[in-house]
Image (cartoon, rainbow, N blue to C red; front, side):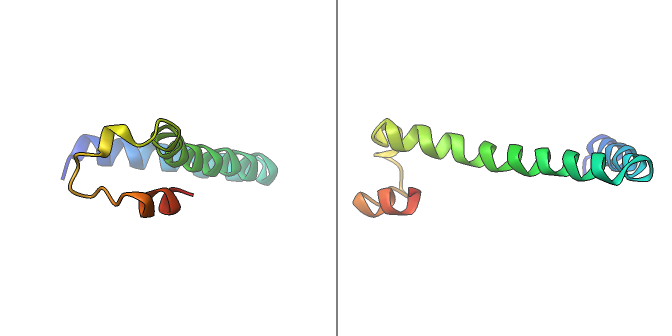
Length: 73
């Protein structure tokens, strides 16, 4: 287990907990931005692959042909 990453994650979580004590609205807004960021971080690579015709993954073992387009949608 990478201890540096664990300690950094713990420090960030403690800082976020302090925001909750200051203002519940600010904490909810911060979490909303985090959820949107995580969603877009997952959607952007899939969208780029979809709109480029999935050319980068045609030789990959997990390429599913036309079914892959449906899965991406």
